[in-house]
Length: 219
Figure 1: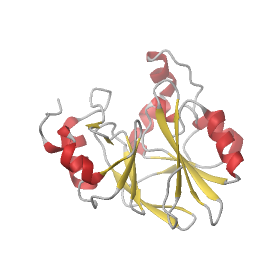
Figure 2: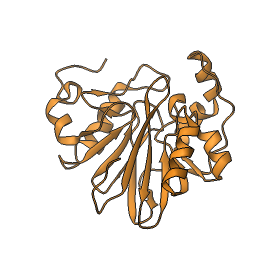
Figure 3: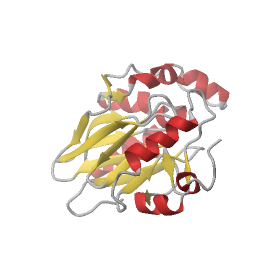
């Protein structure tokens, strides 16, 4: 569990065979929380929410690759909260079962998203606000959620790496432009919570990430 004393509480939950990071983000003062990218282990997410006594208010999706959405149906069924997704990723979302089949997994049809995300939207959890940035490249409708000195970056930027561009809808040029325009313009001490792997900072990636510095080309 992380978070400054005056900031949101962030609970990373690595899960599933792809070690996807789901995140619970809460305002302890209000008890409200959101769940970002509920992947493979829905029971774990629901148990974590229950044990902390938080009130789940929404599911925010950075993108719709199957390892980030497998738990949406079960969490939605248990809580009734709205699901938010950028519409450019609806084709991926609507075909999650086919994505899963390619990977030898099984996913039941997912509930229809309740709200479209768009660049410039502001999302809230208690006192805390997050701006929606449309950051395509890993997928057409990928978004990053930015606020309070942190980024929920999905599969755009990792510690020492960047998201894949060889999946349907991937675009290397778009991904690098998203990183350059929406992430590298943030302060160096901004913490990045990625869809896989440990947290990092914008400053560390600006200096050391070989794809960001251009040492390694993104094919």
